[in-house]
Length: 311
Image (cartoon, rainbow, N blue to C red):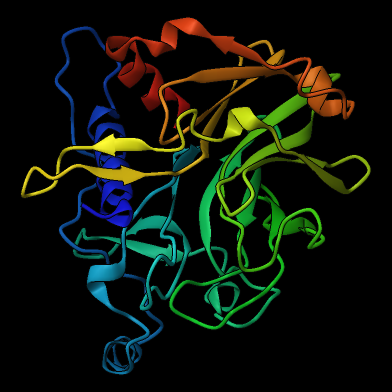
């Protein structure tokens, strides 16, 4: 099993759990499927455009996989990362057609999905929506896989209530490397009752926690040994021929504590869970002297349940 296949399986499993568990509000009520797909389709401007896209390879059905999902005011948004060529739209809102099919409507527009346009989205894997302001915080790696796009990574903050871009911050290359980063997951930190900081895991060549300060429109990062797999890799025994495969994916998922006091993080190819006080991230403090390791996560039985939340 390749790392790409493993990540796809994990994301599909997570998505399935999210979709089938929706609408369960009363004790004893059975779960209902809200949306389901055997393959993804989009809200094309015209049927001819879809057929042309299939012919020229800009739409390859098998390469379109949902990873991120967020809900705001009964609206459902999903990401379709450009792991491979043939992904026409990387950030979308789910909509129903007149014949009750669930399709993806490029968000906010088709124009914002144009590969090669560095003002548009190139590769979106994750986003976060602040329920109080209605702001969607979108992270873009800037590099569409299978293509030649080499844009700077960026974070775009979009007002879902008023339908406009509030902020577009392009990360300097010395903070997030162009073409070699993998901005993977994001959480938002509140300060004095307002969303101010974004913490982003970078699973690229140099594992990092990237910090974006909305108030001063500035970004910086932390790199630490705890963001790497402790033994350098994790062994996977689930291949067809029962062969052992090693994968080395570093920091992957991050999560915010309910009181905004800690950020939890973990490497995908590891069994350890760590946390860092948000005051250290906010104040650019000493990471090495402040990070904490949760020994309980070493136990295999607990690792899986924690890992699902961490991712």
